[in-house]
Image (cartoon, rainbow, N blue to C red; front, side, top):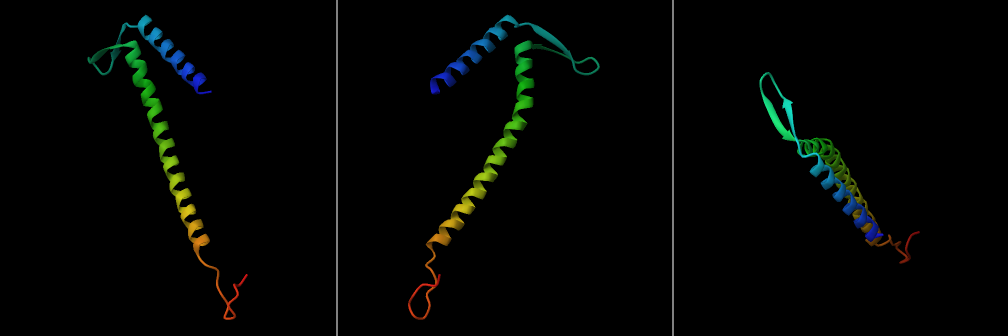
Length: 96
């Protein structure tokens, strides 16, 4: 399965490189009144991909961090409950 995952990412990388090499042309962006920027198409696509991907990735990492904290707190609570000895009556037998 690891081989298929690696093969998939190698194919994606090859396709991205082919796309970038075939479309290596300047694009003029009109930013404001008389301000223009010449940018290569693959660089422009990479910037917009990161603008869309990074907030989603950061949100996912924050939720994973929150879930891990909750899980660790539950595990600590469970460990402390299991480690506590059962209450003992005066006769010496545990209460159930």
